[in-house]
Length: 68
Image (cartoon, rainbow, N blue to C red; front, side, top):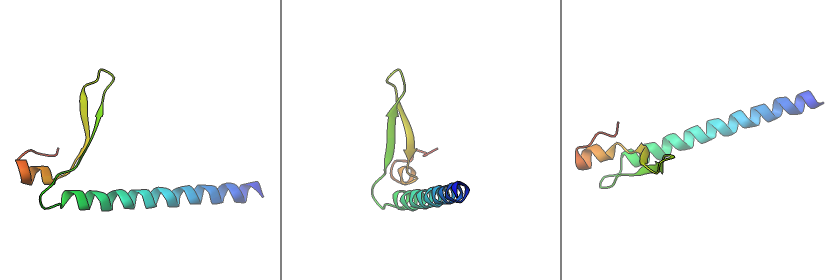
């Protein structure tokens, strides 16, 4: 019985991961296509220096700066 439950748990986790990845992709598409705004995610490293984890592609259209 434990093996069946374990298999089901793995399947549920995989389903949640796929759903999360799909939601992330929808959010990226929305952020990249905002007509007059850019979005970003910023963190700080161990020394307190800022580091961008994400910058929407719309930043290039608005400011001429590459998101890469």
